[in-house]
Each structure stands twice: as structure tokens, then as C-alpha cells.
Length: 370
Image (cartoon, rainbow, N blue to C red; front, side, top):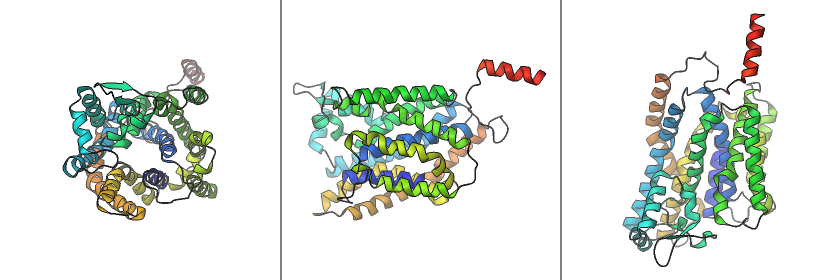
């Protein structure tokens, strides 16, 4: 799914700096929602195959995400403080935040950890000092964050905290949790608070996507390993949906592409899981996602009429450089981690499997005795 992830990252870029003007490519927010669905699939995959304990999984996720995040954060802060370059804010606003204890603490915490960064869309600086809750994100703090797109990592990390426990759940339990989340989302969308900023990035409303990804992996696990022609057709179909999803009625957009992705994930992944290029593009999509706003800001600051394709090429070049700078060391550490805590289960058996129901276990033992 690496190619799909890079296309989704491009969709986010295109939302921030329109490059394919007039094309109904998926909106950036819905592209991020689709990322969540794919993330659920991948986390179920690696927990099934690679890590014996939740601690090892958490450390692996930390090594994968945080070093590159810190680099992107440092680049953004460096540009803002030294050159006054940022796509949404400026140095004077930053000084104002530093002088406001409440705003500074919230901004510092969410920028350093990403946890709670989605709340910046619902918090604004009050005229008399401090923070106030707002229903519209127009005046909220999010635009002053060094890495505006970091809010999605906050929701990702919340799911990561739950993932080792979710893979032990029975399929119908995961499905029930996902349906409850989906019902809650639909209920909010049909309610008077549908446009309140707080609910636009509220984890319980997006939890169904992660659950759907876990279920999609369980479907994939039951498939034959050899790819079929249908898998490649579904990949082409999914690419087409990415470039046309914005033409769908707005009310359906939060469900259309994420839902379609969940349906085809098991088969599309089967087709490309052995392709090195697909893995590379997937890994490059993360630094591109984190760095693209800084690249946009630089072009906007120093070019009179910046071209979207020039920015895109520069962003991809920066992402590739970061990937090759960090990937080798990170993968070495993760390999040592896996070897140090190698699973005791036989090769090919799941490491963190769903816990068998006691009644089923008893029946199995009785059948073995007989």
C-alpha cells in the first residue's frame, strides 16, 4: 500500500497548495482518514508477525515515527524563528504565545509529544489572556503550530496505545467497537453540533477506521498468498477513486474513500507486498507528509509565483533525503529489538493472537483427549 499512501500524502499537499487545480482529487482531511484505515491494517499486521510484547511494539513505533517528527519540527521552528517563514503564522505571533503561559504550555506539550494536538482546532487565545474553547477553528491555535499536520499523529498514537489489546480481541468484538464508533460519527454528523471543530478530529468518531483496518487484515490473513489479476484491477480502481473522490457529495466524503479502501485493502496489499518500490514509497510518504508545509512556506516566501510541481519535486527530494538519512539506523535498531525479543512461538504463527474463548479452549482439550 506504499504507492497508495504516497498518493494520499500528495492529496494532502494538493489541499494545502493546489497543484491539480480543477481535478476532483480527494480532500486532504479525507485523505488523512484513509491513512487511518491503512494504519489499522498495518498495525494488525506487524503485531501479528513481529512483536511479542506491547512494549516492543511501542518502542518500534517510537523509533519509526519520533526521530523524523523531531527533525521536521526542528526544521519548521528553525525557519520560523530565524527567517520568519511559516505558511500560516509569523514570529510576532509566536512571541505572543510565548508570553501567554497557558498558550505556551499547550503549544509546547502538543508540539513536543503530538498528544492532544487536535485540540488546537478548538482552543483560541482569549483577549484577556489564557485560552478559550471555540466552536469554529477560524481563530483557533492550530494555525500557529509549528507542524500543523501533527494532529493526525495524535490520533494515530491513541490507536497505537490500544492496538496490542485490540489484536487479542475476537473479531466480533472489534466489529462491534467499530460499528459503535461509526454510529456515533453518523449521529454527530446529523446533530446540531456537526460543524463544531472539536468533533472534526475526535478520536472516538474516527476509531471505526482503525477497527476496519484490523478486520481487513484478518480477511487478508485468510486469503491465498499468491496475487490474482483482480488485485491489480482493484489497485487501479482505488487510484481512480483517489483522484475523483472530491466529486462525491460532501456528506458522503468522510465515508467514501476510507470505506472503499477498507474493502479492497486485503487484495491490494496482497498484490504489492513483495514489491520493493511499493515499500520505499510508503516509507517516503511519512517524511513528505511532515515536511511539505515547510517546503511550501519556503517557496511562498522566496518566489513571487511558486509552481506547485516545483514545490512537489522539492518536497519529495527532501523526503527521500530524510528517508535515506534515518532509515538505515532506525531499521537496524528495530531488527535488534525483534531479535532480542524473538517470539517463542513456531515460525509462521502469530505472535499477538486473539485470545481463544475459554469454552472453545475446553472443547479443543476434550477433543484432543478423546
